[in-house]
Figure (cartoon, helix red, strand yellow):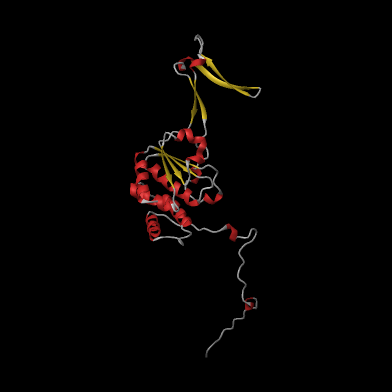
Length: 253
């Protein structure tokens, strides 16, 4: 990310109270690692943060800290029925299903004239956030939540190495840093740089920063390299290993 973009995002996050980080369909490990790192850091600074993915995450992300908090329900719309000026008349609310039709039953208190149905309000409920960061995604990936997102401040965080960019953002904002945050970002950094084969000098500087904050690397292997149902073969011993060993003592006079 360009420094100007980092400054814009820093300004938005500084003033935000509740933040939504929204991933694209089929997100990369770098995108998820960077988002989790930013989420953890923002939460420790006192902000409310939701991290959501359009699709369920696959098993490859399980090694990332706090990945179990990623939700797929962001933007699911509830129907909220309100009773302005009539709340005190309500005794209880129940429901039943009649011939496949859902019926809400609002029972008024005894001795009251009952509810005026013309005053009922039906509102689509949804998440309440003031700042939305699309992580390598866009509002088009979140059509279901479009209505709720329109009123929020928005930022598209697109970068070939998001974990590197997030490290710079956290540093620029003086946000909290710990080993879990740093370890997530190292995992994303290594994936995005192809284990540093496409790294720049800045990438190594960021890696050093993360390690100074307690970040640690994790062993990574490609499942395609492992043949199912096999175990590594032990080295074959030398032929004389099978022969009996005879030990003779010597004496001197």
